[in-house]
Length: 142
Image (cartoon, rainbow, N blue to C red; front, side, top):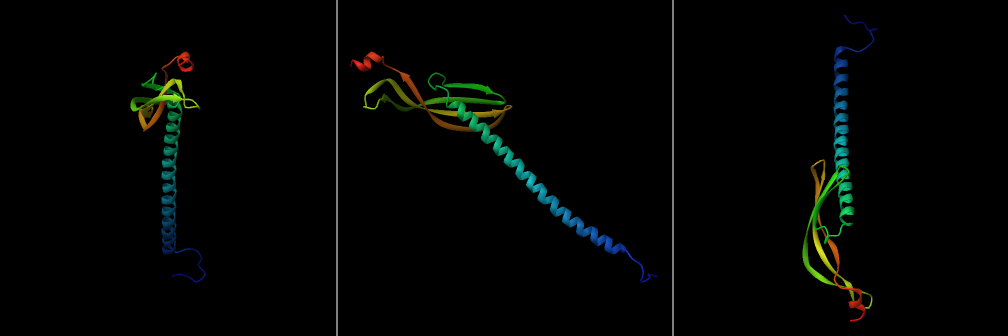
């Protein structure tokens, strides 16, 4: 028999409390897990973006006429590129619209970026190729 002075939880009250706590803990775990997955995706996107920015900065330093294709290792990144000339070729003009010693052309470049031989990204861009085609005397005296 249960006396009226008895204090504490009954077994049923303890089971209900544990069930309520479990539901709250499961919801909290799901929320934390979702945030961790989102953070992992953001880290992957930031890493990829940084690698592509580095590759773009490097590609802009090459002379596409002297190095139409190649591969370079920059730390843990490997950058591969190949170029194809476009139909645009023209004389480089000065401020007075006179021919200079150079000839310019646009060149399409396809670039692939790898980290530890795993592909990170690919992109295409147009590069400016400048080539000396005349002597200085030809420009001034003709």
